[in-house]
Figure 1 (cartoon, one colour):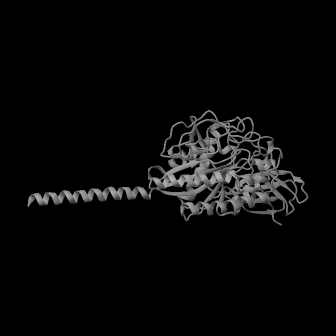
Figure 2 (cartoon, helix red, strand yellow):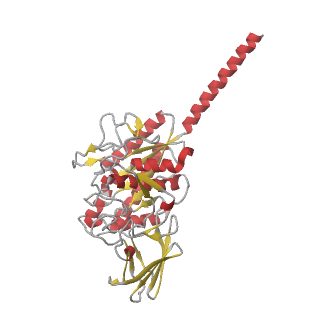
Figure 3 (spheres, rainbow, N blue to C red):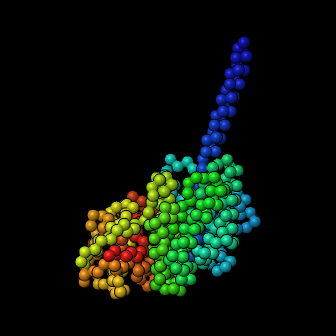
Length: 422
C-alpha cells in the first residue's frame, strides 16, 4: 500500500512540477517586447558620432543580429535573429561617412534606469532611417517605406517565435533638415507627418494586433542657419505646432542644447546618446505613466500697452533662464515683431509664478504682432545657433552620465512662432 501511495505522490509531484513549468512558460509568454523604431535622417544613424561610447549592453535590450541600421548594416543574415544591442561603426556606402553612436543606447539606458527592477519587459530598437531624405520620400510608397515595414514584419516573426507579445508603441523621428533645403512649406510638412502617423498606425496594428496608438516622438531640428535655405525656421516651427495640436505626435525635446560636430548638422557621440535619453523620458511618461506628455509650449498670450505675458505649459515646473548651458542670444531668445514686420526693441524679460514670461517693450505693443523664440543665431547649437535660454527643471530629477560627465536632462523650450492675439 505504501508503494502505491509513494508512486501516487511521485505522480502528483510530477504533475505539480509540470504545471509550474507550464505556468512559468505561460508567464514568459505574457512578457512584451516593445519595438522602438528610429526613423528619419542621418542623425538617427549616428552619422559622425564617433568614437563609440556604448560597446557593452547594460540592459536586456535587443537589436537585429545584423545591427541597428537596417539600411546600412544590412547583409544576408541581418534578420536572422535578435541579439543584445551594442553600437558599432560602419561606413556609409553613399557618403563615406562613419556611422557611430546612435540614439538607441541612450534611449535604452535611460528608459530602463527610470523603471528599474519593476520593468520585466524588453526593448528592441532598430533604425530603417535614410540620410539626406525628405519627409515625402520617407513616408511615401517606395524603398524606405518598404524597409520600414520589413523591420516590423521581421521583428514580429522573431518575437512571436520566442513566445512573446510584440508591440510598437513609438516611432522616434529625427528629421527635417532635407525639407529645410527643399523649402518644404510648414503646412505640407505637417500634413505629411499627420498622414504618416495614421498610415504607420494602421500598418503596425495589422501586424501586431495591438490596440494602443503608435505615437511619433520627434526631436526638433534647429540647424536651419547652415542649410541651403538659410535662416528659415519654418520646419522647426511646424514640428512645434504638431506637438501642440496632435494627440499622437509630440516633441521629446528640441536640440540646440546638444553638442554638435563642426559641420553644425550632426551630433557628437555625446549629443547622440543624450538625444536618445531625451526621447526615453517622454516615452516613459507616455507608455508607463499614461501621461499626455508635451514639451514646453505656449498656452496663451495676453498683452497690455507695452507688456506681453506668455503663459507656458511646463512639463516639470518651474521654468528658468539658463545662461550657463546655452549662451544668451539676447533677451533669452525672444523677439517681437509688429503687424508690418518691424522688430520692436525689448526692454525687459522676466519669469513669474514658474510658468509665465513677461516681456516689456520700449514702445507700446499693438495687438496682432508676432512673438518669435529661437529665431536667431548664425550656426547650430548652444553657443551661436538658433536658441534660447528657457528650460524647465526636470534636470533636478533626471540626469545621465555620458563619458564621465553628469548631464541634466531638462526640457528646453522649442523654437516657436506665436501670434499675439488682437
